Image (cartoon, rainbow, N blue to C red):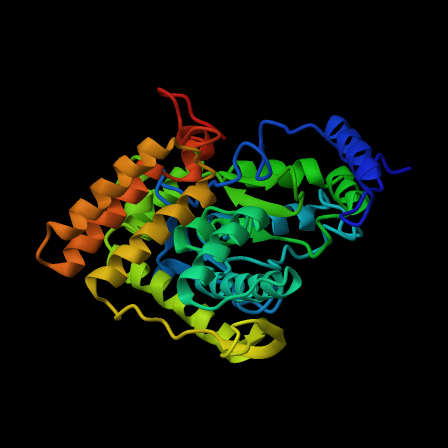
Length: 410
């Protein structure tokens, strides 16, 4: 009998009781990972807390007939996994792995790997636009100009708890661990179904395969038992990293510097322009769908100036009056970017502190004769002072399983 039959469709009571029972029966071990709690942002922030993206040129694709098409991960993780697969095949040939298992058979395929952040970010923005448009319609809000639209957008983002900026999305739960490039799935199952999770983790082959993975710096995820995550600070993974880095001594940040890039650092002007273009596109698309709305006004007579009834008129939403890339345009969106990042990071600041920040980032922009440099300085100031979610729960060291002293983490 399963410890828990809870699924993502269960009611709140059954889900809580089921998930609690599952967690108690299958506590996290030393050679498992925990992507749901302690290490949620693992591999997606560097040691400074910057949200990062993988350089796709360092991906390796699994091209065998047993693997799902287009499955990939970062090269050093692929090297480690393929070595593990060789040992898996040896153990299966010796009869040490029961290949009659529905989970561990005579092959060890990859079902899912890296996912492209850009595609997911685009999907997120489409969802934000659709949800926001429905929000305006369902609440009967009247939008007559762009400034009114952006005020409602901030109200919506706060209530819906949705990310809009690039960095906000990359550090959100909507950005899955697969985008890190250090994650692989070796089974296709419903991760929201506790009974399937229990069957996988209870399989007699699970302990042996876990050890084979750990010997190469790879771990099964306690949350999704068939998900493999590379421990980038494992001593057992170091030989594979060293080969790809072409250096024997390295620190954690070297991995990020070599194979990843920061989502916003160094490209603030581009991401800021993207932010502006996205919101303007939202508004212009909204105007196409809802170009006008009805408004009842009093009809008066000129002779007596008295009310003789009401009439129905159409009010049309105004075009955006900000001159593109002008000083007024940039300052308007810098203020909007700051307020959006406050919502995304759930930062609560006194009005006086917000005003202090506003004066400073506006000053950085206004005091630089080069517009692009001014924007970079202003956005860098905002990102630095509001930080990322990496600094708001566990430490970055804990997120990335950084070694302390000479202790090697498996």
